[in-house]
Length: 114
Length: 110
Image: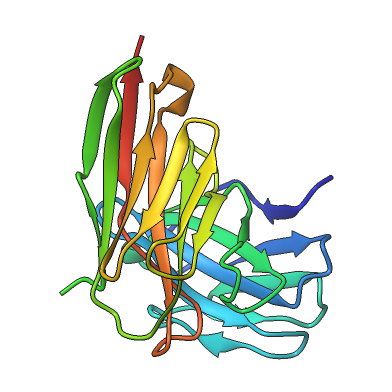
């Protein structure tokens, strides 16, 4: 009954360090998404994937890279972290791309960049 | 200009005091409007999908309605456990995924 699992849940980085956030879903969903949520800004889409081996840019893709090598996993990478990337990151998955609107979200990964 | 605007930003109610949250949108070609609930420290959880003006959906003390330019989330006789941030999102012709509003933080006091 896991749904969408994100690791790690918390991370502190120094400016310039790199890291990868992992998202795993066990619902056999084709579509997966990475969002960031900042106070006063709402949820903003970083990148998404419409299937294994595919990725696409969202609203705020700069400074991030993603990969979807396996259907169940969607990785978000920061190559050189900046303080502006301090945020809460949410992964989500869905059966379809927006049609039903039912995205299943993970519990979030809180990243602080010093 | 935001494509999806939610109001108020925050709302404090007494237990049992009914009210409504608003979500207005300026996008064209609406394909669906969605409501989510988000508890502190958690990811959003899906509540409703509305597809056309006049449509209504209900779940316990919540009822969502849709007009041509806005949606309302009516909360009847709320309880403290209804306290959460409520997010509205739209799926429209010009964007392949959902566009979220900034949310309304609801606090229901006993």
